[in-house]
Length: 246
Length: 246
Image (cartoon, rainbow over all chains, first blue to last red; front, side, top):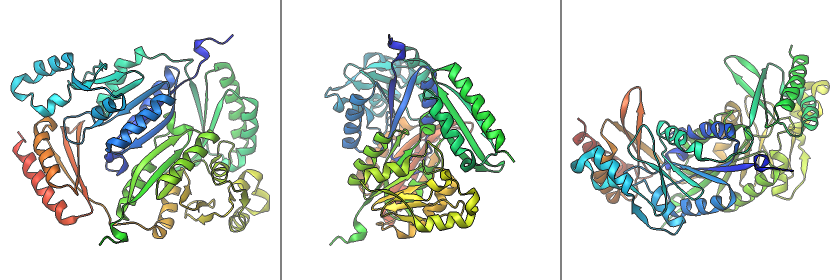
């Protein structure tokens, strides 16, 4: 009998911003979110990076919110003209963008009437029906609407928002991972590694060659929700790579 | 009269690999490719990260190769069981995966008969009709089939492959960018920045708050194919942020 915990929960990350695509900013949110979601039994199963173009953001959000259990967005919720995520999310859900009373109060308390200009007030607007996601760094909130979680692009703020919303997420079994790094050559261990993968169908074995100052080699990452099989698999891989280390 | 050089060439990057989504590897190819493509007048207009699942890779490649001028893929062309990109690309194009004679010769010369095992031979297989993309680091090639460029995931190898294929790409006007970093607060400059953006419709102005050891502030990135307008825009932004620096 399968229970809720055997279900695989799948998430998609939508990274919104020209700066990521132009290379002027290196994304740091995807790896963080991938790791954190694993720990609560949610698989980051796809990511999309889209430019600051309303039609593209809206169609992407509507496509992925229908396909995945969870959608996380990062970027585009600040006070400037290029921060168009909230209007796009409202449009995707066909709801109005409204001034959220709690966000308005926090921002009035923080800035005072004088400094709370129109630009900053934009950050207190959310799609109608959204629930705020607080953070410890900035006064501007993220929010959730249905299965879509809208977060800031600045990594520190995004991480704080995620720490607040994580306890509200339902996941399955946490994914555990083991890594073995070796000087063995990928081409030498490939056949043996393929055999081990066939023997352990519930372990996902990835093989990643590396080259750097420390030399060249391969990093084998094994991931599973089954800790016992993961341990067994790890022993086999460990034995295999030792055979091929010169 | 508009010429070929006024056309905007758009590219999509497909990053293939569970390791990127699980957070065990931080992608380093997207920012590199975004910057490099800008220089030759091609706009990286979307990126997708997909897991090592054949159906997902095939459908993504088929969707984006129809939508974009260029598609670049990274990852999944090594010798191990999880390297499934080439079979997926062949399937996406409904062609066979064939042993490429030039790749076979290079690999035989390099490894000799004895070390050229079945795993390594996989790397000499490409979709029928593909043209090889060499690199200076590894003997295993990437390849091009129609508008799809298949490259390695290891950044050094990917970068070498890109340097070989870049001269074969047709682009429009190069995108030039200027960056101004300032301690001004985003919420203070937002209205003025919006005005400047409206005045310079052919300059893309992005505003990115930062917080780090060096303090907090905002980085304004201006991008355009029109160098004169970019300079003018940059002067206006420079003047604006100075007004709000305390």
